[in-house]
Length: 171
Image (tube, rainbow, N blue to C red; front, side, top):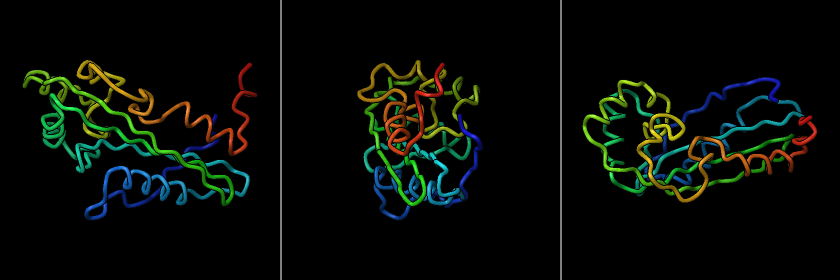
């Protein structure tokens, strides 16, 4: 269990022309570097982005932008990229997990109802697969937990490599 949750204060805006996978990995590295920690502390940071081709669909600023994202994703495949970084002392271990997701064609009624739910807020691409948005996703290829925002198997491997006693906590 984490002893403390510390939000890193970084600029998360993409650089001009930055590709989604490069962007996501960079943001995660910047996050893990920005968190103050002692030499023996283990710091875990992650970032998730939705990529439609070369376009980065981050967290929508408002319902109008969320609607635009959903319309762009409707009936299409896209990639969800989640980067994870674990730091202990000066050593950083990282992993990028990419999952292909297909969203069904959405009706205006579905989009409107989803926007009213508020679930889109704070979600890359404007949807959450683990909630109501899961009804929009008939198919994925890759990691479900990475689409939710933290690839569990890869994170466990990184934590163990950093010396976290993952299985000693289970009783």
